[in-house]
Length: 301
Image (cartoon, one colour):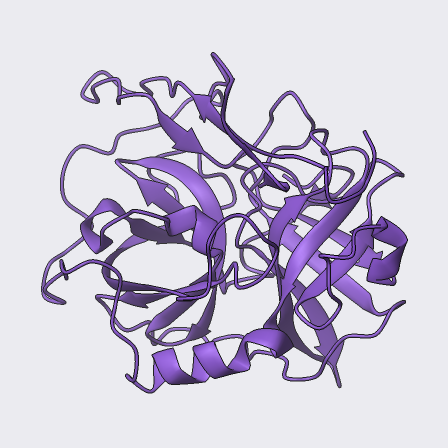
């Protein structure tokens, strides 16, 4: 497929299997399917990387950047209410329902400039209903990335085009000049680019997850997974939202200047730990059926 402005973006629909006798089979819903070519990672090594869930099923990745805030992609939470989403910390494998800790969401803030048809502004912030005090949040990087910058991609996404998601993985890689994509709509001011033609990079479910940069021995979030220029996770170019290009949105959201998405908020006193959440099989999100939901300029992950 040509890597130009005609490259497509696909979202996929999948059926999720019931993982315990007390859990009803959820309705068909959109998922964002770890990192292709990466290696398994321990949540203890990346304690700020979280999974996003709806009705007990994971769909995206995010990062704790403040004791009350999660950074993720706007397309992950598009059209969702705060009550639709939970955040799961400390899980090596999201397919095991008892792994980690769940926290309710108080509000969702998507960049008002996001429209789903371009690469820009695919970023959102989730305000937690419970403050996280047992770990240091990962700071955001405020410097524009140059080509050949070393980064570590982390996420819960699929390990190949055929699935294998829900397990935390990492990949060491480097950025490239975005002009190599041949797409004039891909601006290095707003995004960070990676060459995925070697078969390594992000995939479905890594959406919203971080690409870390090492600054003096400390990891900072420099980018977050947005999508790819071709349908396969093993080819094309990996396009990520540049955090340095979204500083105004981030700072305004964290300072309380922006209005949250929708009108429904969660009482911070509510717990996210209730209900039936018994053990999960290795199957997790079974990719029972896939169908294109929308075709746009790119494929979201």
